[in-house]
Image (cartoon, rainbow, N blue to C red; front, top):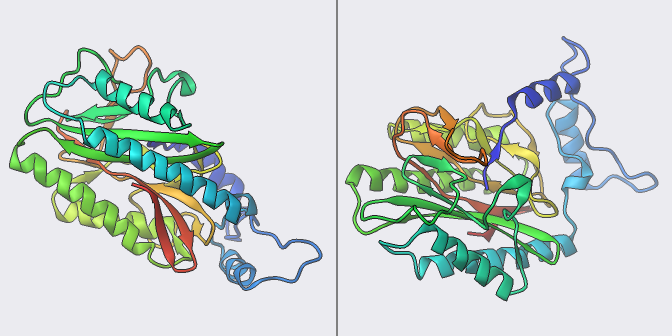
Length: 309
């Protein structure tokens, strides 16, 4: 479930990170454990930190037990989306999709994380055509031939979270819309490829994703981003899908996060639907279609592993 990049909060955070203009030092997020010798991982992270890079704090590094819990949540989350894939069709309402998500999740011991989260009224997000994300399932939203729809699910299992979304094409769509869906998938895989080794930066994957989208004539939404996930619904880091290499947080083994680029056919700018009484649905400013895929990953010593897809 894409998270709003709180631009004012980001600015304030960056101002607090830097000590003084000219020093170019980052707040020391990573610290050694008192009484224990530094590990090779400690040495590598501290080297980046001394160079003024933004590094994670230790609480973002999951234990083996936590990763196993997140992995189990991911298996259920993937199964929920598989259940949707087996039934989604023309003439179905998005409210019916929501029921599939809720029923399957609770029948297997899970909890749909979006339900009642900060006032969100349903168990998943169903975003059709120009709806970029956070589309609320409704009885009146009936899937039609040619629609493209993103179904976004986050599952809590035994206190652990996993998050993923998929695009579904209803019947046969306009070739231009199909190409948008395909390039959005390619953008996800481009970001994943950058994370094929640890100790890369969020800006590295964002830069690669934006280049691929722009090369194909599309834009990347900037107001929403991926995020850390696992022990909470939304954690650090904010995973923006554009930017400059070497910027953003360093991604190290043990971190769990989503990559979920939102790719627009037209402008990257978005707005919140005034007719949505809950204030959640995000729409492309020019009301041209948007597409998104999302996976949850764990960073390992050998690069990212998909936890939920």
